[in-house]
Image (cartoon, rainbow, N blue to C red):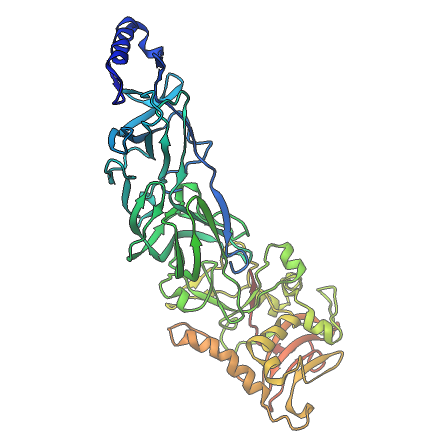
Length: 548
């Protein structure tokens, strides 16, 4: 008949049940109560995950995590039930049997069970999902335990939920509520407030997290001592936009709840570029932790042809090649409008040979950009080199054309293209050259000033401007610039070093129809951005930059 009755039913009642059973076999599937003994059935609910963002300012599984909306009647779970005989002795009535939604109720299948009808013959229920978990052990009268080791590969992790109902009265005549709770913390990743380089994310790994222990139904985890690394491989292509998801629900990590310190997140692109971040925290069961990952743009970082940026160490396993040195981590409003918001990077080499020079224009009487840059503030603040350079692509504007035609090289001398979505190479403006000298070249730090002297037409760092100043600014500037270049040259890359042997470079900023701004590294110790000394027909070097 497929029915099982709770122990302790008296003989007369048993006879009545048997008679009733025999007389109602044809309608058995629709009978839920017999002689006041209700069939054991359940009402089931699963909670929503609580959400917590981590690393917001500094700060589920291959199967999609279960929510209250997704734990539908198509699901089934396993059940353990211990019955008290009324004297404190327990026996297992239901041992890991399946519960499914059948005939409009949650019930054990194929066998059915009925309440004893006696208040003191209580029952303890223990349910778990999914039902194919094999390492659940149980002794009658004690809560079951799950021995579990979290798989290293996230694609093998599952969202496990449990529910308990303790000391449920034996004369219950309604559905027994089972509220399932997630036993893991869910961990996801998105792009943080400082953004990330665009590209395809190959993997994200968290290391230094405890990975095993027994879970006791109704009370929780006892952590083991071993730690492990956990890897998710989403193959997600991101633009780097703030807030974008890196891992979807399908690639959510299911972690044992724990307090941890100095764990490491490693984000790896498909080129091998990887970024690391140390985290500490307290994961609680049933909570989703979204780590908002960012890679700030730092002055002196290298810019790579896969669109990433960072240190040489962060690219030690990368197939990408460095193509520039970042000298600014902000962009002009016009360039932000082109979606180049991260900043600017200076090329590793000059256009042409290291000593090649180009005229700005073939005569000293033109105003192709339509603007003139006058005064100290404008000299420093003009960051629109790209806009200026767009007007310098017609014939006779050799310096502008040369900057645009620059091609970066890898270690083997092969041409290396720019990442998609960048500006292309262009001639830096006066303000962009100022940033190169002041930030990469260390002039602001060495002098303690924005400049040592200046006028409407120029600014400079020069020791004769300040009494007692003995700095050789041009030597200091090229030395600091060359630190970044030499770090790459030592690793086999071709670079053009700077010299303070009277080297001059063009900018794209105009002062007048006669003059355009140039930067000079002069042998007497002077570093200057100057509009007044030379006309546009002069020939100077070209060091391009790129906006990204």
